[in-house]
Figure 1: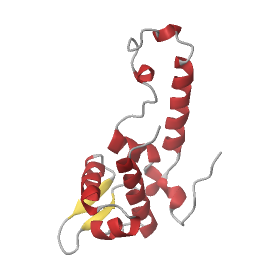
Figure 2: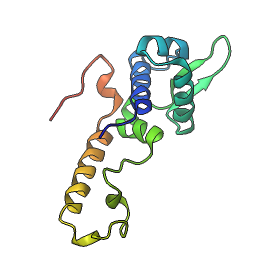
Figure 3: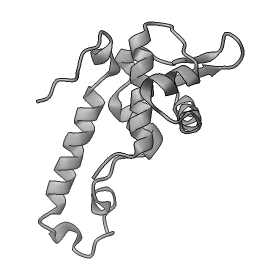
Length: 139
C-alpha cells in the first residue's frame, strides 16, 4: 500500500514552501526544479492544494505559491487527503455493509485500528517539524 505519487509530490511542495520561511513565495518552476516534480503535474497539485485552503497562488511578475496557513497548522494528513481523499486501508473500514462478513470478521477491527493509527500519526505531524531542516521523528 502506498500513497499516490501525486500526494508524495504535494508533500514535497508544501515541505519546500515551509523551508522558505514565513510569508515567502516561490515560482512553481522553482519548486518543480528543486523537488524534482514534473511542472505540468505540479500545476495540478498546486490547484488542488489551493482549493483545499493549504496554498495561496498569485499570477504575474510578483506571483508564485505560498502557504495559506502557518506550518504548525498544516499536517501531513491535510496534504495527503487534499490530493488522495480520505485514507482508507480497506473498504470495510469506512462503510458497514460493504463486506459480507461485516461485524463478524476478525480482521475488521485490526484494519480499523491500523487506519486510525495512521490517520492520527499523519494528523499529528505538522510541517512546523521541518522548518529548520529537521526530519520527522519515528516512534
